[in-house]
Length: 328
View 1 (spheres, one colour):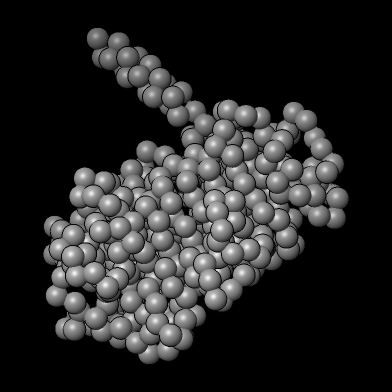
View 2 (tube, helix red, strand yellow):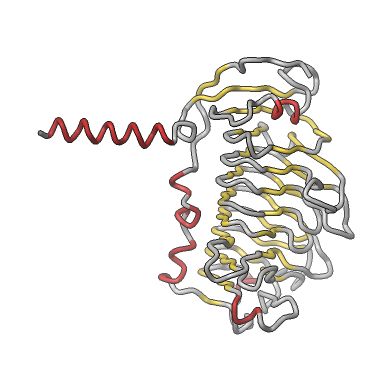
């Protein structure tokens, strides 16, 4: 009887794992991009375009060091792609364009199950207008040790569940914005504004909408004293929590901004939990922000906030050649 139970359990486990076969696979197709011609492709977009539509195989696109002056799109029908450099300081994807439409960002991730590793993604347009370095629309996207650089509106965390770890994000105002459900862990948020501005502009528009940003064990810095706020509500029910994070003196004592509309004070949810540093003093915070108790903070401070244990996956440990090699 015990053996039958074990067999049933094993079969059930196999069924569950097969439904997540890509996410838990230890192998992936390897495609190399090298501008010198020593890889499969010389352009990143050509490598992405080579991935079959409705892809069901993990694909690891490895970039040789270099500055890639390209506008990159990962289409919605090409999931399970990893785009990786070896070091973010030497693997740079760059473009120069103001935010006119959805095609303006330097990199646009429309597909689900995307991973970015050891990359710098930047938009050099500015500093007098919005210029998006990265836009993420796809669900279940993760970024590790990446750098996102621009001025206003650097990172459009548009929709879906996203995870950022050990990333550096720089801008002037609203430089992390959108309506994603996202967990930022051990990230450095740096404002280069000398005239003030908000770090976040989260766009949750109703109480029932399950979106928001958590910043866990992060670092907040700026170029001056009292030059920035932690967030302002792009949507009336904007939701942002900072926990166990260092805040420099660049953070204004008030902490948060209602974007000139006092009605937002009743609906936005801005919380802080066990933060530290000169900018974390709560004595002069706006009265409508939340100083969280342990039970109140609990839902926000683990990867369960984004259901991360269900979809975050390890880096592949073995690689296979792509079925078709290019030399573009």
